[in-house]
Every structure is written in C-alpha cells, then in structure tokens.
Amino acid sequence: MPEDQILAETAFKSSPFKARYENYIGGKWMAPKSGRYMQNISPVTGHVVCEVPRSDAADVEAALDAAHAARRAWGRASNAERAGILNRVADRLEQNLSAIALAETWDNGKPLRETMNADIPLAIDHFRYFAGVIRAEEGSIGEIDHDTVAYHYKEPLGVVGQIIPWNFPILMAAWKIAPALAAGNCIVMKPAEQTPASILVLLECIEDLLPPGVLNIVNGTGIEVGAPLASSNRIAKIAFTGSTPVGKSIMKAASEHVTNITLELGGKSPNIFFADVMAEEDDFLDKALEGFSFFALNQGEICTCPSRALVQESIYDRFMEKALKRVEAIQAGDPRATGTMIGAQASKQQFDKILSYMEIGLNEGAKILTGGTAQSFSGDIEGGYYIKPTIFEGNNRMRVFQEEIFGPVVSVTTFKTLEDALEIANDTVFGLGAGVWSRDMNTAYRAGRGIEAGRVWTNCYHLYPAGAAFGGYKQSGIGRENHKMMLDHYQETKNVLVSYSPKKLGFF
Image 1 (cartoon, rainbow, N blue to C red):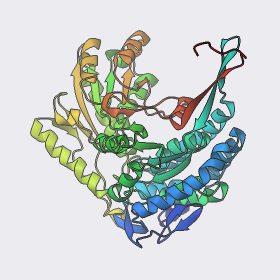
Image 2 (image 1 turned 30 degrees about the horizontal axis):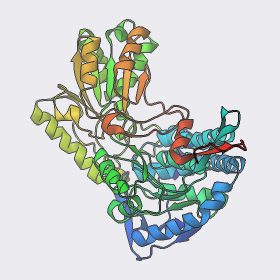
Image 3 (image 1 turned 180 degrees about the horizontal axis):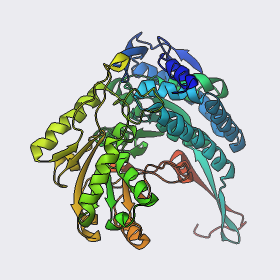
Image 4 (image 1 turned 180 degrees about the vertical axis):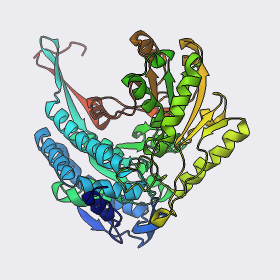
C-alpha cells in the first residue's frame, strides 16, 4: 500500500464527531428542552462515538415555530435566489466531501469507497439538479375563450415534515431537502435515531448559507419525535422513507389532518437473468455477474436490494458457479479502509434481525450456497456488526423470498419462460425495484413492461440519477422521488380564473 494511502487510512480511524450535538432550530444549535441525550453507537466498532438530543414534542413545536416564522419570506424568494443557495450548498458539500463521507461511514457502517464515490457525490448532484429545475419551472396560461383566461401558478406547501432512514442518512436527506427547498418550503427534519450524527456534520458545513428557520433538525426516537411530527396539524406534508409497517402508521397519523404524504417504503426486488446472458464470455456477462452481486451493496440495506435472483433454468448451474465465485471475492472488513467492499450493518438490532433470517431460511428448507454467518475481525472493529454475503437457494413461497431482510442476502430460484419469470417476479406485496438482464432487447422490453415495479433497471442496477423518477407500486409507497416531477409533491397548483368580459353571465 502506498505511504500516502496508509497515512490517509490512519487518519480515518479517528472519530469525526464531537462529543455532543444539539438540535438545529431557527438557525441556532439548541439543547433539547428536556435536557435528555442518547448515545450514538458506531456500527463500525460497536462503541459510543457521540451523544445527540433525545428530543420530544416540545422540541418539535419549537422547530415548527421557527419554520413557520421563516416560511413566508422563503416562499416569496425568487426561484433564482433559492437556486443560488442550493448551488452554494452543493459547492460547500463538494469542498468538504471527504469529511462528510467519513462521518457517514462512521455513522452508518458502509464502506468509505461508497460514501466517497456514490452517496455524497449523488447528494451534491441532487442539490444542483433541483437548482436547475426550479430556475426552468414555469406556470401556464390557458385561453378558455376570448374573454376568459386560466392562470396556473405553483406555490409552496409551507412547512413540511421529513423523516429520514438509517440506510442512506445523507443521500435520503438530500433527496428530500433539495426539492422541498427549491419549491420554497421550510423543513422540520427527523434523522433516524440509529444514524443521527452525519447529517449534523453536514449541517455544520452549510449552516451559514441557509436563512434561519428554513431547515430545522430535531433528533430523537420515532415515538418521541417522529410521531408528534407526523401527526401535527402544523405541517402541510410529511415525507417518509423507511419500512412498510412504519409507513402505514404514518399514513394513519397524517389522515387525521388530511396531510399530504410521500412514502418510499420496502421492497423485495426481483433480478432476472435470461439465458442469453451466458451466450459469450465477455464484458456483458461480467456486468451481469456484478449485477447479481449488487445485493451486497451497502450491506444489502437498500429498499431496492436485488434480494430475489431469478435465473433461467437452462443456464442455472453455469451461471451460479460464476456468481458464487464473484460473491465470495467480495472484500469485507473495516469500512474505513479504501479497499473494503462490504462494511458493517447499521445497528445491532439490524444485525440480529438478519442473522435470525438465516435460521428462518434453513428451517423452511432453503439451502445456503455461501455465507450464512456473521464475520469476525480483530482490532478496534472487533465489536462491529459484520455479516457475510449470503446466497439462499429455494422457492418463491419461502419467507426469505417474500419478506424484506434488509441485509446482504439474496434468495435464488429458477424459471423456465418469460411468463414464468413475470409470475414469480410479481408474486410479492412489494413493487419498488427490479432488474432485467438480457442481450435481446425485445425480451428485456417485454420483461420490463410486465414487472409491477416503479423502477426496472435493464442491463444495469443500482443507478440513482437525479433526473430519473423513483418510487414504488403496491406496498412500496406513494409518490415519487428524484426527477422534476418531485417538485409537484412539494407544491400546490393554484388556478386563477379571470374573466375580462364586462358582461354578466345572465343567470341572475
């Protein structure tokens, strides 16, 4: 290893966090009103790395007060002014990319190579994308008749609540912050209690760029902060990314006040490999094998994890022989090392849940082809939460095929025909993502159109460009994220219908 790389990785071993953080409300760092804090444990080491507020409804109300105080001025700011701030935020994040990426790795457990090359760059691009989109947004004018004109204006909702998951703490925050601010809303945000600190490191980098009250962050548990925020009559919208059961509870809370909602929920995504992928030993086959292995990206803690692999029967043995070698070559270890491919699960709770599914699969009669156990390391990561990439072989009726495990686990089965593949792929309550792999674009097209999912990657997987709509069918959610259509989720359309005729209608 080059000396400069050794020095860099040694520096990564030091915690990037302060001993204690506060909430960010109205442009100021404020202690929780109860005076309570909770410990933040890094999954990398299994040790406490800082304290964050254990807030409650009183802190939520304070944040809502600040957001409401700021919302009229921010909502009236020109699109060009808001776009300028978003671009400056992107520039600042880019200038501090390494520090923010390291904080994300420490907080979540994912490898530094992912936070450096995917999570934070994608977050930066998201701010730039919505800065550009809002500059180009226009209303419309419709001539109903010669003397009657319909004007359509886009207006911000006002104050919105946002609840962020623990699997992509910063990227998922950017997915919500960028369009909401671009549209002219003020935000009260609750980070996940499992990963509460990296977003605060980010905020320290940009706080001078934001008008006070435009973005407020309140840390705490789902019960003590998330529930009061989702059920508040002082928000115009609640946006949530997380599990389907929690999403259902948020829907119930929002229904009390008919609050606008966007939900991005669970998934059990099929990844379909047609026989022609094995037609040649070439770059395409190499790409398809990487596509199979993507169930291990981010330790499998992705709602679109390709956690069900469907391989055409005629190539199953040959394809799986290569797939097993590819998966077993995944380099596990310290997420802070730049060569590590798979890091730690985000929490002890999630670690235990994933391991419990190993027993569930075996009890159902599934066969473990590789993995199936935790991983042990020495040094300061000895207490971290590490699991080997695991491949189950079974059938789609098994729980390991139907339930979201949210770990580096894929369940593999076979299919005979396109129709057979579609039947298996759609036999799930979820419909978030899917993958299709074929050299025949006719086959790929028909498979993509037949799958009941909001995004179908075709001859690729795990690409998340800002300009491509993302969201789910069935129990995988409501609404879309990314793409300019996301602005519609943070805006009201006002119609001003104007008559220029001096004559009355004549009814009275």
